[in-house]
Amino acid sequence: MDAPLVKTLVPGSRDSRFKSWARLIRKVDTSRKDGYAFEGPWLRRGRMDELPVGSLVILYDETGSRRYRTPCVEVLRLREDGSWEPVEDGQGPLAARSWDWALLLRDRLAAVLQQEQESPLGQVPTAVLAHELATREDGAGAYVSALLALLSEGYPAALAAARKLLAAQQDLGRGIDACAARLATVEDNP
Image (tube, rainbow, N blue to C red; front, side, top):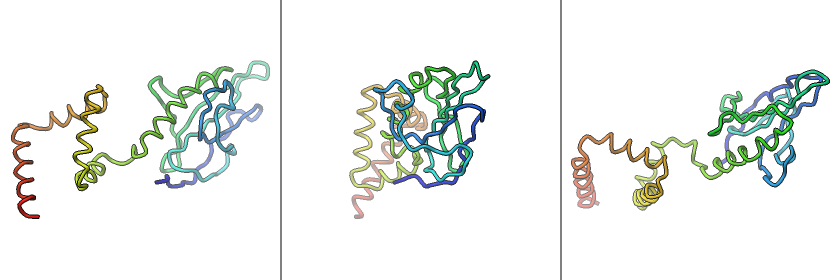
């Protein structure tokens, strides 16, 4: 499922005296050490465009004086309402103020893109996913198998989900008995 398109204003230049550009990021070439590591179509700063929700854009500006200017680079994500938000990872915002900006941001942005590609259903609410799995014949079994595999690997999100699920049950035995009783009535009345 492709993200819906939204009209947005690409942020304008910070300082019109110096170099400034924007690029929609589709891919990061981790073998490159310069700005060409970031691949995707160029965008026009300060102009309207129509982009998919969740798009990542890298903004490059040079700021300072004519003699002592410095690149100021940031990565933004497009929201559903057409506004922009800074992209963050475990180290904080994806931003750099240095001539080494490409090397500083390259691997971090590649990891963010990889994570988003691995989780195409990341924007779907958990309740909707759980309902879909519950209604499929093999869904609940597949979900439990995947959850057990993640738990055995010590995956933090799976451990947190299991802890939350167990904490919500006042009497786990009573919950298991209720499920067994419900299953028996469903099997008796096909």
